Length: 120
Length: 166
Image 1 (tube, rainbow over the protein chains, first blue to last red):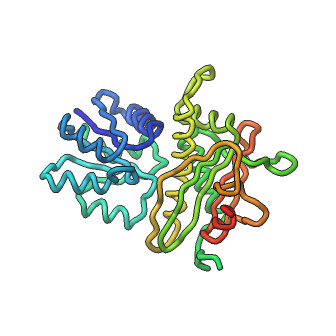
Image 2: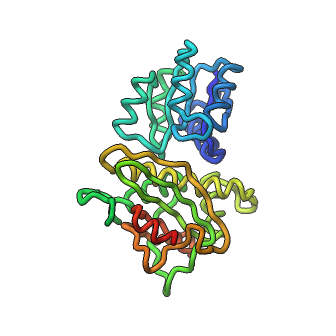
Image 3: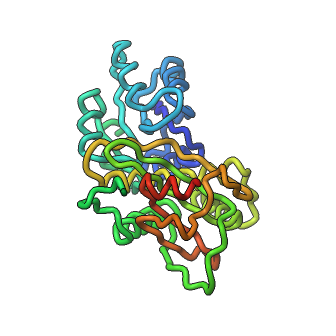
């Protein structure tokens, strides 16, 4: 399966990748994007089975990315990995069509719980 | 007058709890308080993120370049001999302050937006965001020990953020 990881921090993308491997998801193909606009391009190119996105990013935020995808009719499973995990943000994310919100700092168990049903 | 509501939960205890969690999860390190003698020297590298909306303020991490490199190496699990690019060091410390800021935001009531992290390096001038001075008292300030070097984590409200910038 292909997974697009969108985060403006290269270091955080590396940490997300490492945590995904620790959570048992090492065998998937991961495509990185440095912001929401780049993620939209990568999703168009790669047609992934899952998108993991930061919320705060330059050019296009995570929620703008999700809304742009849904406006295009793209129903790719989408989850946020973000430093903000307030109930209000989770509501906004869910209403826009996100499957889950993983709050930073996170653990491999958080990825197992959230991604297991999608990637297994 | 501070914009921080009387009921704001932002204090040293909350910030320390956030820092504990971030240090453990992102850096794989236990938080140790700084017991060094004398005043903490002005930081060479500062990472900060703003909070705007119903609560306005700033979360800042300051440290020496060597501590920033150590933090980045811990996040990337880099080898002892590995030299990290300055871009990655700044990115790493920026992400630490971003996560701390996001968790501080989570403790606030109302509608507040988290900005993007930014990094300042080198000597400070009056026009830049400088290190905390005696006139700029943060609502919370923790000084941590990173392998023998102090790392400060501070939270300012808008009022004392302005004082800090002046």
